[in-house]
Image 1 (cartoon, rainbow, N blue to C red):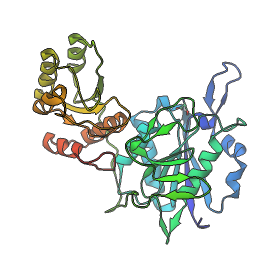
Image 2: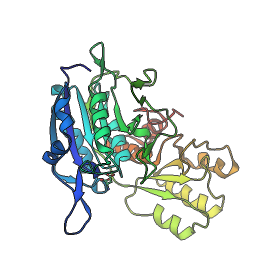
Image 3: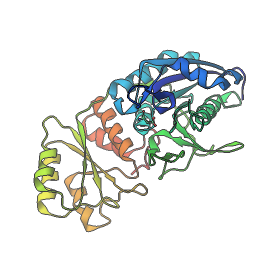
Length: 342
Ligand code: ASP
């Protein structure tokens, strides 16, 4: 590790920095000074570590668009002063926030590493210390003076993942995250073994865009779904886009009422992005008859994107006010490594 690295910890909250409230017995966030008390190892790093914190640390279930803007803002104002960033975040919505930052920070040339933990850092069996220490190590790792990681990632347990490919799959395991459709960017053992061939490289100056549009929703289909439910959801006033969570490789019912409801939505200019309910694999519209009509209706294939990445990408692109033709084209492209281009 290079001894001259400056790392900024951005503490947003989450289990890693929680303790039991003596009155209610629930886990509540504590302030960052406590974190330093619980991780004296922070003083032993060769690099310079400084920290900033949300004024009021939050459980990540309270994360919203403003929280993403605040995280991006903290990186923006500190970008030139630090070599890498570690964002301490609750696990519940970390995949969404990592996706959001990956879109907001186009051409980021420094590591932005999200991590958190399943057990609070004050508990004896905590996974938080290891995750935090590994995240700092990766955020400060360079090769020939250049950061090895130049993208937004999640470090959890023994893996470094591309942030917008992650999904929290376990409430129980210490390895709580998976990246089912994209290999880990590093395996963390005695050595940190990077997949240099997979890591993103910037191809221009950093641009930070912070506008998101929240006029979107998720329509998850299920056997027995009713006409009134589908029509009700698709006609919510003001909605601009939906993630349609479908079966298998992108399939849905062939009932005419269902296809008519989707057709009516797309003809009103509503964007519908098809992602699979399966954890692994991708949407292939037209592979089965049950997705054949989707292409003709103008539904866009989300390919191998996670629901988290698809949802946040829609919010991000709608916030940038693209015209419908460009919006559809960019949805099919990878802009931050979030999908196979389709
Ligand atoms: N509810 C917590 C959060 O997301 C869970 C965690 O951090 O693991 O903030």
